[in-house]
Length: 61
Image (cartoon, rainbow, N blue to C red):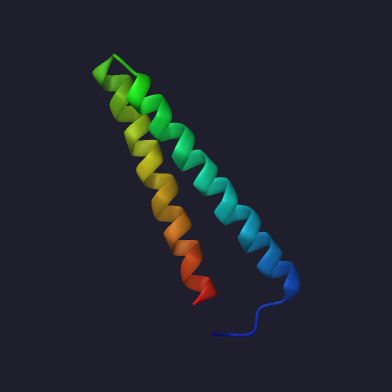
């Protein structure tokens, strides 16, 4: 792992936490949606947030 500054580490933590929160909220909204298009919209958003979170997590390995 390359050396990352404490500020970069804090920024990563903040971004990862934000994407995690977004993922959870989008999943909850998708589960409550009755319209298939709305449900799909939130499911796609949840997947995108999880993908972004996983990409950022790679910087910590």
